[in-house]
Length: 385
Ligand code: NAD
Ligand code: MG
Image 1: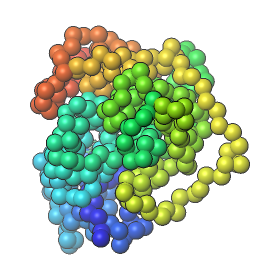
Image 2: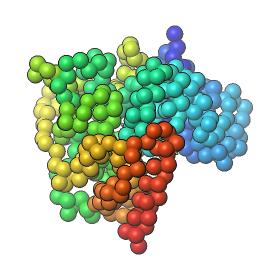
Image 3: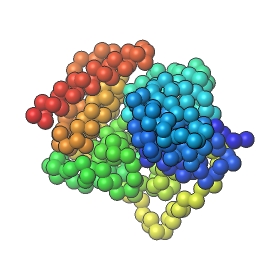
Image 4: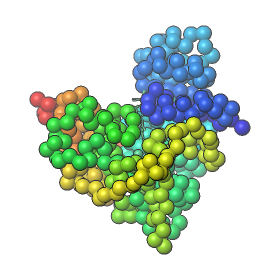
């Protein structure tokens, strides 16, 4: 039976890797929807190639341009947030690969409709973890982690069951600045920050890897996905990115998942789940890798690690505010308006503001998110002046 797939964020890095796998196995998958933020030409080309039933552009003003680009095809052009949500509801499996909190509403729409979600969009889970997990439980929707670390843990747990687990060990590459001093990092440019040694990814997550906020967000992501408290989720730096994460059991046994540093491996796991699919990905050759190194992370040089753990432990609105402040600060760094060290410093300053308490609804969460972004933008403007 073919699986009906919706790819949200089809023009991005995870989106392209997903398309690569889906297009190589046309009998297994039927692409029902593809979406993008604003790149009309690329979205239309993807829709034509995959025979997608609908293409959704997030920016409503671009609907006429999309309709024109799709002329003569069977693909329905749509635009706006409601259309993104509708596309997410109508699939068997949604690959959620939109970057940032922009992905939240479509992910919630899928979960509320009981649709299985392959979740790459970690920001939505960091920001609205309780609300999302509650929605998934209510509708009996499955969340399959696309993020390589969480996918590794999911596999080591035997499909997500957390019986007899002592702790989770999230591995981190340490990013491009792993060995630099704080002073050396402070003068790095966006181009240097996005040049990741092991993974090729979108700009935002690449900067998050350089600050190690990515691992902080993943800590919170792991807490929600697997239900363990902060003190039972460790972070270990592993520069080779071969071991994607581990689970330690009560008896002292540790299971690790290994694989090439290629997002198509965890994506293929989600696409085929609960089965497996063949891929043409280059295999790991252990003698070539020869050695695996592990070291403790350094929260002094990478304050984002400390901030994220504190936000998880504080609870309330702290994770949502951490995420919102980080998105704004990273965008300002990519625009060369603030320096590298200003990212974590900005997040820390914004987090120190008063906590409005845990959001009880998506609407409340989005209010907190908007207020935090406004506060962060003001701070960034002062820094940039
Ligand atoms: P990317 O920047 O390459 O792609 C983002 C996609 O989201 C694009 O298709 C873009 O058009 C769409 N998008 C952006 N803003 C939008 C908006 N406001 N509304 C609707 N669509 C919008 O990002 P990526 O690297 O593919 O990452 C996607 C998500 O997956 C992120 O949450 C990231 O943290 C996560 N992730 C990525 C990787 C990776 O290897 N790239 C690994 C693990 C997790
Ligand atoms: Mg990851």
